[in-house]
Image (cartoon, rainbow, N blue to C red; front, side, top):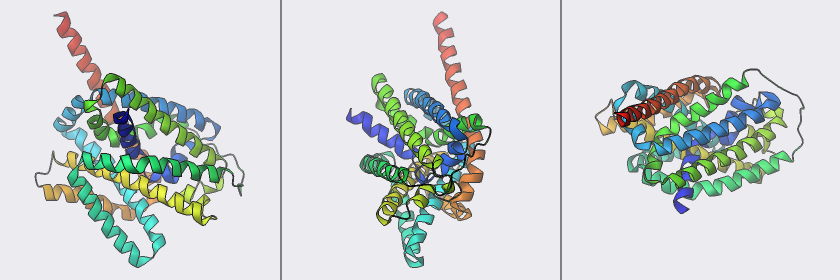
Length: 331
């Protein structure tokens, strides 16, 4: 079971980024759609389970497709750059609380550590997520429990249409950026282990999405804050610090996985390792100057549409491969 939980934390760490852990992403894709948001979260979790299982089982095939398809890599590069930029933007927002001098120092340290992890690859990422994610999950839970007991300043029922459309977009966005990591993670898992990794990861996502949505739905005044959970915990210094730590860890683990994904995608176009590394780390860092809220609110929905295209491509490829094998057996 140790291998199962290591894989669960690795995948969970690629998804729980700044948007998820700050509450902004939960608002954009779920909370603003009213009471039906709980149904959309359930459907999203079910889709995550099916995709986790499928991609963990078909890992080698996915990696082969990623290596061969230029168009697929270009789409993934765009999506990953958007997501990576939002992680950098989220971290910059957190660093801004420390003052201008420390802000520059922390940004420099972040860049150095990101470069080192990206160079070391999957093993380094597995160690980081195995250590940080269990701690992060418990702290996140404590923060949500605290906020849920706070009185809301404003009570209103906001319900926008098209939640049923945003639900699969959320899954596509988050999964398309982590498809490479998920596929690599499943390379040495048995069928039984694959099932449990898929189940536990999707249940973990369901639990935190549901609880996070409950908190936001009961504190609608936080909807338009850059980081809703951080905003809701600011009246308690201790809880604010815990929430700050959760978002920080969420940003960092997702940032590392995205930079690894970008590096692999850029290898199909760039021969120089130095240029490849620069594009994977420094380009998103510069784009992050657009701002966290702007990237999540405006670029995430566009990227999620492209993410749907990526998932449909793979699902179609899986089906075509299955049909091809069936025809060969008949012959």
